[in-house]
Amino acid sequence: MFAAVLMGLPSPLQSAHILWINLITDSLPALALGVDKNDGKKLMGRPPRTASESLLANGGLSVICFYGALIAGISLTAFFTVPYMLMKQEEADFSVAVLAAFLEQKKVLKRAQTYAFTVLGMSQLFHAVGMRDVRQSIFSRRPFENRLMLVAGGIGFLLQAAVTELPFLTGVFSTGRLSAGEWLYLSGLSCFPLLAHELFVLLEKNGTQKLMEKFGRDAYESDRDQERAA
Image: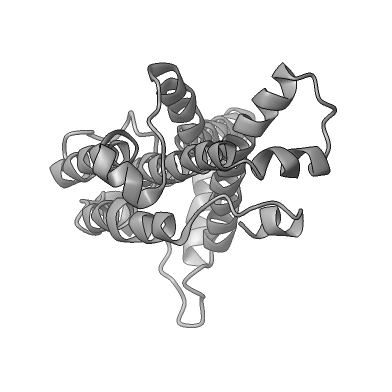
């Protein structure tokens, strides 16, 4: 929203959209993560936190900033998709001024906000799945172990779909109905946080394997023991 306003463009979201996401699609996954089971053996293998260590230490702040920027980026991408496609159809030259002119049309702005609202809501549901464990792939965790997460995700997706498909809610939230193709496109954008999570896990795993192959498993484990002792 801040980036769009700086560019002199209308806000990608309305206040009702933000309240809906905070109260509905954010609350249930957060509760589900709060009761998620952890791997006690792996936790005990990590060095304890020091008394002076920040809550956001060990990459916590970087994770928050990265995923926040990623979700903001895909939400803005969804918002700009509508005017961009119209500009492409009319063969108009791309510029911020032309973009703003297209978004001044109420129907275009309503459609663009629907896109951004949908992606922002669904992307956080996908993101919650990956945040069950930042160091493990979702395929290595038991997907049905946390049934509350499945319920929370299912309800979240249904509620997010309801605000674009049910006539009463579309009037309240100033949204428009989406076609199957639009749902497919927006779902693909919304998956990016989960795809990024899997990519980071894969890169970290490959980096660990290369260290073990280069220096030997014993040397690698010795270094880990020294880090834990420190």
